[in-house]
Length: 428
Image (cartoon, rainbow, N blue to C red):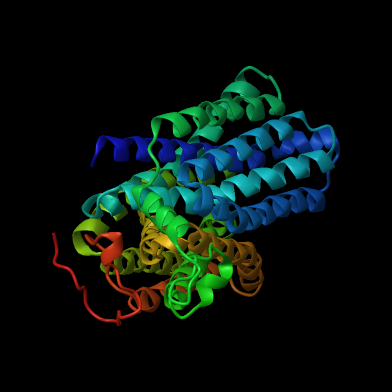
């Protein structure tokens, strides 16, 4: 990996960490916000929904900027936006201004995902691309821990109030904006595409390239759009379903108390961080399709075991933690479908294509917890997790509908002529 690729990966990883921390800090500070503004549960949920709406809009709009002005400009805009919006939340004097701040926080964090993934996939060599994407995506669990640490130090230990947590998280975000613009080089892939766009002549044989969402549904890009979007939707249904409802399964189905749930969650996601890193490396060695299949089978086994333990009344603590570790590892499947979708879109539409797929995945993520809650009402929370896993398993036939991308340069990947079948590349 070149020195510039390492720099890009480092700054995108840091942006991922701050993204996750800014997204998560709201849930940690909710009790204090509720008390200060006198909010009811409905209003608190509405603010959370406003944030998710922002992520959908941001992932649709800001990638257009990254396609037209460059990945560095796109990254800086995203990080600067969610950092300043986080500051605005800390300064808010009412629930309305707080909701506006959270909306723009969502816009920035929602767009940072497709733009950052496109930047890394374009600048890292093919043989290390999966590994790099795994490192990038592991910034999310690190960000969860950062948010918890900031909350512990500034709210619990120093008793500076919930606003201090938001102000502290502004600093690292704004601090990396200037280095992204001054220390990083633009993606060579984007530079080449932009040069071709500028040189295009309006003639009968050559028309200037249009960068817009309508392009994604032309015959040239439709297959890539279908595969990437369906992967993100089923992947989000699985990952968000597990993240939201696993603690509920522990508390409701297995009668864990708050402390037990906390320890279980901590262990599961700590091991899950390793799962993120291994997913990328193994995908480089054995292929995206095989490793995604393996990760989903791990998740299926773990959730089946959870249901078996519930109905057999075998609540062994050791076995529960083993199941939790397997579940944590399986959520690393997000690395695989993010990596794959960033590879199958061609240069001209990579960030807007990813933005569209991520946005549809976010919509699925909003719907899934409610759907699983309804299922849990009639069965059990563990059974609803099995439904989420079944939806995630649908990623397997979808990814086999496209080409294997491991070890290939982005210009060597031909989605249009690919057919479902075994890997086209040799194991490295």
